[in-house]
Length: 421
Image (tube, rainbow, N blue to C red; front, top):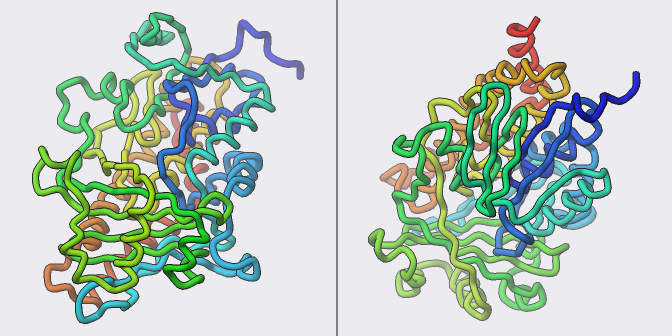
Protein backbone atom coordinates (compact mmCIF):
# COMPACT_ATOMS: atom_id res chain seq x y z
CA UNK A 1 0.00 0.00 0.00
CA UNK A 2 1.42 3.42 -0.97
CA UNK A 3 1.88 6.31 1.38
CA UNK A 4 -1.13 8.42 2.27
CA UNK A 5 -1.30 11.66 0.25
CA UNK A 6 0.08 14.61 2.24
CA UNK A 7 -3.26 16.42 2.34
CA UNK A 8 -4.98 13.38 3.82
CA UNK A 9 -2.66 12.92 6.74
CA UNK A 10 -4.03 13.38 10.25
CA UNK A 11 -2.27 16.38 11.76
CA UNK A 12 -1.05 15.96 15.34
CA UNK A 13 0.23 19.04 17.18
CA UNK A 14 2.45 17.92 20.03
CA UNK A 15 3.09 20.90 22.29
CA UNK A 16 6.15 20.36 24.46
CA UNK A 17 9.48 18.92 23.37
CA UNK A 18 10.35 17.21 26.64
CA UNK A 19 10.92 13.51 27.21
CA UNK A 20 7.30 12.58 26.54
CA UNK A 21 6.85 14.80 23.50
CA UNK A 22 10.07 13.82 21.75
CA UNK A 23 9.60 10.12 22.54
CA UNK A 24 6.08 10.05 21.13
CA UNK A 25 7.15 11.92 18.00
CA UNK A 26 9.92 9.35 17.49
CA UNK A 27 7.59 6.43 18.12
CA UNK A 28 5.10 7.66 15.53
CA UNK A 29 7.59 9.07 13.01
CA UNK A 30 7.03 6.23 10.54
CA UNK A 31 3.22 6.33 10.71
CA UNK A 32 2.29 7.07 7.10
CA UNK A 33 -1.16 8.45 7.98
CA UNK A 34 0.08 10.96 10.57
CA UNK A 35 1.78 14.35 10.30
CA UNK A 36 3.30 15.15 13.68
CA UNK A 37 4.86 18.47 14.60
CA UNK A 38 6.47 19.17 17.96
CA UNK A 39 6.25 22.74 19.26
CA UNK A 40 8.76 23.49 22.04
CA UNK A 41 8.65 26.73 24.04
CA UNK A 42 12.39 27.04 24.71
CA UNK A 43 14.89 27.93 22.02
CA UNK A 44 17.43 25.40 23.30
CA UNK A 45 17.68 22.79 26.03
CA UNK A 46 19.82 23.70 29.01
CA UNK A 47 21.20 21.85 32.00
CA UNK A 48 19.35 22.66 35.22
CA UNK A 49 20.84 20.04 37.51
CA UNK A 50 18.12 17.43 37.09
CA UNK A 51 19.11 13.78 37.10
CA UNK A 52 16.98 10.76 36.32
CA UNK A 53 17.42 7.23 37.61
CA UNK A 54 15.03 5.26 35.43
CA UNK A 55 12.97 2.54 37.11
CA UNK A 56 11.90 -0.72 35.48
CA UNK A 57 8.56 0.68 34.27
CA UNK A 58 10.33 3.56 32.52
CA UNK A 59 12.78 1.19 30.85
CA UNK A 60 9.97 -1.09 29.65
CA UNK A 61 7.98 1.92 28.41
CA UNK A 62 10.93 3.19 26.36
CA UNK A 63 11.37 -0.24 24.78
CA UNK A 64 7.65 -0.28 23.96
CA UNK A 65 7.66 3.20 22.41
CA UNK A 66 10.56 2.54 20.06
CA UNK A 67 13.97 0.82 20.23
CA UNK A 68 15.54 4.14 19.26
CA UNK A 69 14.11 5.81 22.38
CA UNK A 70 15.60 3.06 24.53
CA UNK A 71 18.94 3.41 22.71
CA UNK A 72 18.94 7.21 23.17
CA UNK A 73 18.58 6.70 26.92
CA UNK A 74 21.22 3.97 26.98
CA UNK A 75 23.72 6.01 24.96
CA UNK A 76 23.32 9.17 27.06
CA UNK A 77 23.36 7.51 30.49
CA UNK A 78 25.74 5.76 32.85
CA UNK A 79 25.29 2.35 34.44
CA UNK A 80 24.33 2.20 38.09
CA UNK A 81 26.99 0.14 39.83
CA UNK A 82 30.09 -1.45 38.31
CA UNK A 83 30.32 -2.91 34.78
CA UNK A 84 30.23 -6.39 36.32
CA UNK A 85 26.83 -5.47 37.81
CA UNK A 86 25.21 -4.95 34.39
CA UNK A 87 23.17 -8.16 34.62
CA UNK A 88 22.09 -7.68 38.23
CA UNK A 89 19.24 -5.76 39.84
CA UNK A 90 20.22 -2.30 41.08
CA UNK A 91 18.28 0.02 43.37
CA UNK A 92 18.12 3.44 44.96
CA UNK A 93 18.99 2.87 48.60
CA UNK A 94 17.13 4.94 51.20
CA UNK A 95 18.72 5.08 54.66
CA UNK A 96 18.48 7.09 57.84
CA UNK A 97 21.03 9.88 58.34
CA UNK A 98 19.71 10.96 61.73
CA UNK A 99 18.82 9.57 65.13
CA UNK A 100 19.66 6.37 67.01
CA UNK A 101 19.10 4.24 63.89
CA UNK A 102 21.48 6.25 61.69
CA UNK A 103 22.65 4.12 58.78
CA UNK A 104 19.64 1.79 58.84
CA UNK A 105 18.32 0.95 55.36
CA UNK A 106 14.59 1.60 55.05
CA UNK A 107 13.92 1.12 51.32
CA UNK A 108 15.20 -0.05 47.97
CA UNK A 109 13.46 1.91 45.23
CA UNK A 110 13.41 1.52 41.47
CA UNK A 111 14.61 -2.06 41.24
CA UNK A 112 15.69 -2.74 37.67
CA UNK A 113 18.24 -4.69 35.69
CA UNK A 114 20.91 -2.67 33.87
CA UNK A 115 19.57 0.49 35.51
CA UNK A 116 21.16 3.76 34.44
CA UNK A 117 21.25 7.40 35.45
CA UNK A 118 21.16 10.34 33.09
CA UNK A 119 20.87 14.11 33.17
CA UNK A 120 17.63 15.33 31.64
CA UNK A 121 19.44 17.64 29.22
CA UNK A 122 21.64 14.83 27.91
CA UNK A 123 18.65 12.58 27.30
CA UNK A 124 16.74 15.34 25.52
CA UNK A 125 19.73 16.02 23.28
CA UNK A 126 19.90 12.36 22.24
CA UNK A 127 16.16 12.16 21.64
CA UNK A 128 16.27 15.31 19.52
CA UNK A 129 19.04 13.80 17.38
CA UNK A 130 16.93 10.69 16.78
CA UNK A 131 13.88 12.74 15.84
CA UNK A 132 15.88 14.82 13.38
CA UNK A 133 17.47 11.70 11.88
CA UNK A 134 13.98 10.38 11.22
CA UNK A 135 12.93 13.57 9.53
CA UNK A 136 10.66 14.56 12.40
CA UNK A 137 9.26 18.06 12.57
CA UNK A 138 10.08 20.30 15.56
CA UNK A 139 9.78 24.04 15.97
CA UNK A 140 11.63 25.67 18.86
CA UNK A 141 10.65 28.91 20.57
CA UNK A 142 6.93 28.19 20.21
CA UNK A 143 5.14 28.91 23.49
CA UNK A 144 1.42 28.12 23.39
CA UNK A 145 -0.87 31.06 24.15
CA UNK A 146 -4.40 30.03 23.16
CA UNK A 147 -6.42 26.99 22.09
CA UNK A 148 -9.64 27.16 20.09
CA UNK A 149 -11.98 24.27 19.39
CA UNK A 150 -13.11 24.52 15.75
CA UNK A 151 -15.19 21.34 15.84
CA UNK A 152 -13.30 18.95 13.59
CA UNK A 153 -9.99 20.74 14.14
CA UNK A 154 -8.13 22.70 16.83
CA UNK A 155 -6.44 26.07 16.35
CA UNK A 156 -3.26 26.84 18.29
CA UNK A 157 -2.00 30.40 18.73
CA UNK A 158 1.54 30.94 19.99
CA UNK A 159 3.01 33.90 21.83
CA UNK A 160 4.83 34.99 18.67
CA UNK A 161 1.34 35.45 17.11
CA UNK A 162 1.75 32.52 14.72
CA UNK A 163 -1.14 30.08 14.33
CA UNK A 164 -1.53 26.47 13.25
CA UNK A 165 -4.50 24.18 12.83
CA UNK A 166 -4.40 20.49 13.71
CA UNK A 167 -6.75 17.53 13.97
CA UNK A 168 -5.49 16.78 17.48
CA UNK A 169 -3.56 18.62 20.19
CA UNK A 170 -1.44 16.71 22.69
CA UNK A 171 -0.23 19.03 25.44
CA UNK A 172 3.04 17.86 26.99
CA UNK A 173 4.35 21.29 27.94
CA UNK A 174 5.01 20.65 31.61
CA UNK A 175 3.45 21.53 34.95
CA UNK A 176 2.47 25.10 34.05
CA UNK A 177 0.43 23.94 31.09
CA UNK A 178 -1.78 26.06 28.87
CA UNK A 179 -3.43 22.82 27.72
CA UNK A 180 -4.32 21.98 31.32
CA UNK A 181 -5.83 25.45 31.73
CA UNK A 182 -7.90 24.96 28.58
CA UNK A 183 -9.17 21.56 29.71
CA UNK A 184 -9.95 22.42 33.33
CA UNK A 185 -10.69 26.13 33.22
CA UNK A 186 -8.77 29.03 34.71
CA UNK A 187 -10.54 28.78 38.08
CA UNK A 188 -10.42 25.02 38.61
CA UNK A 189 -8.79 24.08 41.96
CA UNK A 190 -6.72 21.34 40.29
CA UNK A 191 -5.20 23.73 37.73
CA UNK A 192 -2.25 25.21 39.63
CA UNK A 193 0.80 23.34 40.84
CA UNK A 194 1.03 22.73 44.57
CA UNK A 195 3.96 22.73 47.00
CA UNK A 196 2.15 22.89 50.34
CA UNK A 197 5.14 21.51 52.24
CA UNK A 198 7.30 24.29 50.68
CA UNK A 199 9.99 21.91 49.45
CA UNK A 200 13.21 23.47 48.20
CA UNK A 201 16.13 21.58 46.67
CA UNK A 202 19.65 22.76 45.96
CA UNK A 203 21.22 20.76 43.13
CA UNK A 204 25.01 20.76 42.79
CA UNK A 205 27.03 19.11 40.02
CA UNK A 206 30.32 17.93 41.54
CA UNK A 207 33.32 16.56 39.58
CA UNK A 208 33.56 12.89 40.48
CA UNK A 209 37.23 13.20 41.44
CA UNK A 210 36.22 15.58 44.24
CA UNK A 211 33.33 13.35 45.31
CA UNK A 212 35.61 10.35 45.77
CA UNK A 213 37.55 12.21 48.44
CA UNK A 214 34.40 12.53 50.53
CA UNK A 215 32.31 9.38 50.20
CA UNK A 216 32.84 5.68 49.68
CA UNK A 217 33.43 4.76 46.04
CA UNK A 218 30.30 2.59 46.09
CA UNK A 219 28.14 5.72 46.34
CA UNK A 220 29.88 7.36 43.37
CA UNK A 221 28.43 4.57 41.22
CA UNK A 222 25.02 4.12 42.84
CA UNK A 223 21.98 6.22 43.75
CA UNK A 224 21.31 6.94 47.40
CA UNK A 225 18.91 8.94 49.55
CA UNK A 226 19.76 9.78 53.17
CA UNK A 227 16.80 11.07 55.16
CA UNK A 228 16.02 12.89 58.40
CA UNK A 229 13.53 15.33 59.97
CA UNK A 230 15.19 18.52 58.73
CA UNK A 231 15.73 17.44 55.12
CA UNK A 232 17.41 14.80 53.03
CA UNK A 233 20.19 14.43 50.51
CA UNK A 234 20.23 12.53 47.21
CA UNK A 235 23.38 11.52 45.35
CA UNK A 236 23.40 10.28 41.76
CA UNK A 237 26.19 9.76 39.22
CA UNK A 238 25.47 11.49 35.89
CA UNK A 239 27.38 12.60 32.79
CA UNK A 240 28.67 9.09 32.11
CA UNK A 241 29.88 8.80 35.69
CA UNK A 242 32.08 11.92 35.56
CA UNK A 243 29.81 14.06 37.75
CA UNK A 244 28.05 13.42 41.06
CA UNK A 245 24.73 15.21 41.36
CA UNK A 246 24.04 16.15 44.97
CA UNK A 247 20.51 17.29 45.75
CA UNK A 248 19.75 18.62 49.23
CA UNK A 249 16.04 18.97 49.96
CA UNK A 250 14.54 20.87 52.88
CA UNK A 251 11.49 23.03 53.58
CA UNK A 252 10.94 26.76 53.89
CA UNK A 253 9.14 28.02 57.02
CA UNK A 254 6.65 30.14 55.06
CA UNK A 255 5.53 30.66 51.46
CA UNK A 256 7.26 34.03 51.45
CA UNK A 257 10.59 32.43 52.38
CA UNK A 258 10.63 29.71 49.72
CA UNK A 259 12.92 31.56 47.31
CA UNK A 260 15.41 32.71 49.95
CA UNK A 261 15.55 30.08 52.74
CA UNK A 262 19.17 28.89 53.09
CA UNK A 263 20.36 25.41 53.91
CA UNK A 264 19.55 24.64 57.57
CA UNK A 265 23.20 23.90 58.28
CA UNK A 266 22.82 24.14 62.05
CA UNK A 267 20.07 21.52 62.07
CA UNK A 268 22.07 19.24 59.78
CA UNK A 269 24.71 19.17 62.51
CA UNK A 270 22.60 16.42 64.10
CA UNK A 271 23.04 14.22 61.02
CA UNK A 272 25.71 11.65 60.18
CA UNK A 273 29.29 12.72 59.47
CA UNK A 274 29.02 11.52 55.87
CA UNK A 275 25.87 13.59 55.34
CA UNK A 276 27.70 16.67 56.60
CA UNK A 277 30.68 15.98 54.32
CA UNK A 278 28.31 15.81 51.35
CA UNK A 279 26.69 19.08 52.38
CA UNK A 280 30.09 20.75 52.60
CA UNK A 281 31.07 19.35 49.19
CA UNK A 282 27.81 20.54 47.62
CA UNK A 283 28.52 24.13 48.63
CA UNK A 284 31.81 24.24 46.71
CA UNK A 285 29.99 24.88 43.41
CA UNK A 286 27.03 26.97 42.33
CA UNK A 287 23.79 25.16 43.10
CA UNK A 288 20.56 25.39 41.12
CA UNK A 289 17.58 26.14 43.34
CA UNK A 290 14.65 23.89 42.42
CA UNK A 291 11.10 23.73 43.75
CA UNK A 292 9.09 20.52 43.81
CA UNK A 293 5.54 20.77 42.52
CA UNK A 294 2.69 18.42 41.90
CA UNK A 295 -0.97 18.58 40.87
CA UNK A 296 -4.15 17.75 42.67
CA UNK A 297 -6.07 15.14 40.64
CA UNK A 298 -7.75 16.45 37.50
CA UNK A 299 -11.25 15.15 36.71
CA UNK A 300 -10.18 14.46 33.11
CA UNK A 301 -7.12 14.56 30.88
CA UNK A 302 -9.10 15.11 27.66
CA UNK A 303 -11.84 17.06 25.95
CA UNK A 304 -12.75 16.38 22.37
CA UNK A 305 -9.57 16.52 20.29
CA UNK A 306 -7.37 17.96 23.06
CA UNK A 307 -5.40 15.88 25.56
CA UNK A 308 -2.74 16.57 28.19
CA UNK A 309 0.02 14.13 29.08
CA UNK A 310 3.14 13.91 31.22
CA UNK A 311 3.67 16.69 33.76
CA UNK A 312 0.86 18.71 32.18
CA UNK A 313 -1.58 16.00 33.26
CA UNK A 314 0.02 14.72 36.46
CA UNK A 315 2.97 16.71 37.74
CA UNK A 316 4.71 14.49 40.30
CA UNK A 317 7.24 15.32 42.99
CA UNK A 318 10.46 13.32 42.45
CA UNK A 319 10.36 11.47 45.76
CA UNK A 320 9.18 8.20 44.20
CA UNK A 321 11.47 8.65 41.19
CA UNK A 322 8.58 8.17 38.78
CA UNK A 323 7.81 11.48 37.09
CA UNK A 324 9.59 10.67 33.82
CA UNK A 325 8.41 7.06 34.09
CA UNK A 326 4.75 8.08 34.21
CA UNK A 327 5.25 10.41 31.24
CA UNK A 328 6.82 7.51 29.34
CA UNK A 329 3.92 5.24 30.28
CA UNK A 330 1.58 7.89 28.84
CA UNK A 331 3.67 7.91 25.69
CA UNK A 332 3.64 4.12 25.33
CA UNK A 333 -0.16 4.03 25.62
CA UNK A 334 -0.63 6.87 23.13
CA UNK A 335 1.77 5.21 20.69
CA UNK A 336 -0.28 2.00 20.87
CA UNK A 337 -3.54 3.91 20.41
CA UNK A 338 -2.40 6.05 17.49
CA UNK A 339 -1.27 2.92 15.69
CA UNK A 340 -4.97 1.98 15.62
CA UNK A 341 -6.12 5.32 14.21
CA UNK A 342 -7.74 5.17 10.79
CA UNK A 343 -9.66 8.44 10.54
CA UNK A 344 -9.64 11.83 12.22
CA UNK A 345 -13.16 11.16 13.49
CA UNK A 346 -11.77 8.48 15.84
CA UNK A 347 -9.57 10.94 17.75
CA UNK A 348 -12.04 11.80 20.56
CA UNK A 349 -12.60 8.09 21.26
CA UNK A 350 -8.85 7.45 21.18
CA UNK A 351 -8.15 10.20 23.69
CA UNK A 352 -11.01 9.02 25.92
CA UNK A 353 -9.42 5.54 26.00
CA UNK A 354 -6.11 7.10 27.05
CA UNK A 355 -7.85 9.00 29.85
CA UNK A 356 -9.67 5.87 31.04
CA UNK A 357 -6.48 3.83 31.36
CA UNK A 358 -3.82 6.32 32.38
CA UNK A 359 -5.56 8.81 34.70
CA UNK A 360 -6.24 6.51 37.70
CA UNK A 361 -2.77 4.99 37.76
CA UNK A 362 -0.80 8.20 37.20
CA UNK A 363 -2.78 10.06 39.87
CA UNK A 364 -2.14 7.31 42.40
CA UNK A 365 1.60 7.67 41.75
CA UNK A 366 1.26 11.40 42.55
CA UNK A 367 -0.18 10.44 45.94
CA UNK A 368 2.52 7.83 46.58
CA UNK A 369 5.25 10.38 45.87
CA UNK A 370 3.61 12.86 48.24
CA UNK A 371 3.67 10.24 50.98
CA UNK A 372 7.32 9.42 50.29
CA UNK A 373 8.15 13.10 50.80
CA UNK A 374 6.52 13.04 54.21
CA UNK A 375 8.44 9.90 55.13
CA UNK A 376 11.71 11.50 54.00
CA UNK A 377 11.03 14.33 56.49
CA UNK A 378 10.19 11.74 59.17
CA UNK A 379 6.57 12.94 59.34
CA UNK A 380 4.95 9.59 58.47
CA UNK A 381 4.56 7.46 60.46
CA UNK A 382 4.65 9.94 63.37
CA UNK A 383 6.39 7.47 65.72
CA UNK A 384 9.25 6.74 63.22
CA UNK A 385 8.40 3.02 63.30
CA UNK A 386 11.00 1.48 60.98
CA UNK A 387 8.89 -1.56 60.12
CA UNK A 388 6.01 0.68 59.10
CA UNK A 389 8.31 2.97 57.12
CA UNK A 390 9.70 -0.02 55.24
CA UNK A 391 6.19 -1.32 54.53
CA UNK A 392 4.97 2.02 53.14
CA UNK A 393 8.03 2.38 50.96
CA UNK A 394 7.82 -1.21 49.74
CA UNK A 395 4.15 -1.10 48.78
CA UNK A 396 4.46 2.28 47.07
CA UNK A 397 7.59 1.32 45.14
CA UNK A 398 6.01 -1.92 43.97
CA UNK A 399 2.94 -0.10 42.65
CA UNK A 400 5.07 2.41 40.76
CA UNK A 401 7.48 -0.01 39.13
CA UNK A 402 5.76 -3.38 38.87
CA UNK A 403 3.45 -2.79 35.91
CA UNK A 404 3.07 -4.76 32.69
CA UNK A 405 3.54 -2.04 30.08
CA UNK A 406 2.30 -4.08 27.13
CA UNK A 407 -0.78 -5.22 29.07
CA UNK A 408 -1.55 -1.57 29.88
CA UNK A 409 -1.15 -0.64 26.20
CA UNK A 410 -3.48 -3.42 25.10
CA UNK A 411 -6.05 -2.50 27.73
CA UNK A 412 -6.20 0.97 26.18
CA UNK A 413 -6.52 -0.50 22.68
CA UNK A 414 -9.41 -2.69 23.84
CA UNK A 415 -11.12 0.36 25.36
CA UNK A 416 -10.81 2.14 22.01
CA UNK A 417 -12.11 -0.81 19.99
CA UNK A 418 -15.18 -1.07 22.18
CA UNK A 419 -16.18 2.36 20.89
CA UNK A 420 -15.04 2.42 17.26
CA UNK A 421 -15.81 -1.15 16.18
